Length: 200
Image (cartoon, rainbow, N blue to C red; front, top):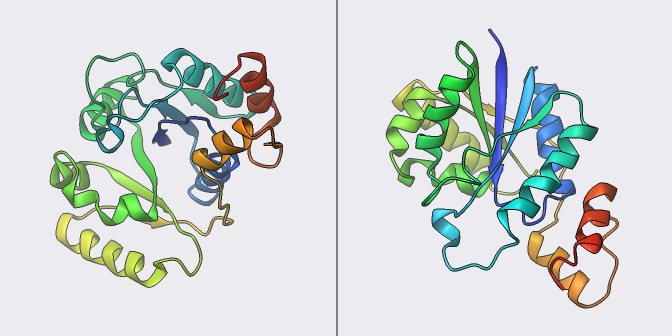
């Protein structure tokens, strides 16, 4: 059975932190594929101004071209309405019939997972890979993982990924201030941002 990791987010823009967790998940969980899933509108980011869907999709497509086993899904980016993870994974389940889907997320998102739209169904029906920052809510995350495994029979893998403290906000601030973003995003993303005048 193929094991497919789904990494979703606004990717506004996609940065080294995203790439780090995707590569760690692929390696540690022996995934056959990583699907990058740019969101249209995240429920927790309503009202935030983002780069156009087309630009965010184009940027992650550059990453997929550069990394073997990576692909892009526009199931959310070009959909109408708010992106809900449960609905999206049910859609992707049909596209990757017979595969085991693993949703990849960070510590904070994981800790609130039960409160997401149809969170209990999400936990019963899908598997999860959690990117942990060493020392950051590590004990709380491990404890929560055990509770959810017992409560829902969920497969949850805690990654041992390298810590990369980068935020999209930091990248945008650097661009507006004329500072370099070379250490924060892959080169192809940096080039795309400047060629298309994003975040200025």
